[in-house]
Image 1 (cartoon, rainbow, N blue to C red):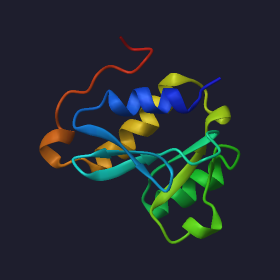
Image 2: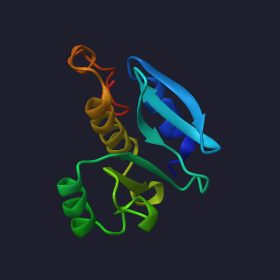
Image 3: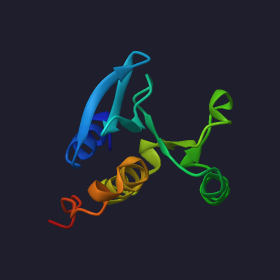
Image 4: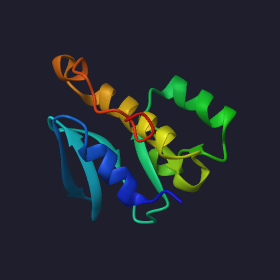
Length: 118
């Protein structure tokens, strides 16, 4: 089963990423812009997601994606680790969020291959 350590390992493998503690839990930034956070429950993580895409994700896969009420106004979505199909899906979700936060010159650089693609 996937866990918070898998999220951490993938996030830190991406260029320009650093880990910082906020709200008493780990968050990951690319060049100072947060792109992943792992809430206290350690059973989920949150990533950047444009609101329109978020609505579509939640409607298509509510067992996987959701937004807590206190985050409804944000452009973030939560992802249940247990609902993911594996490391490749986790990698793709984290990379998508990273690309939204990374500066253009960094986002265009080649990335390390995903877990099942090395």
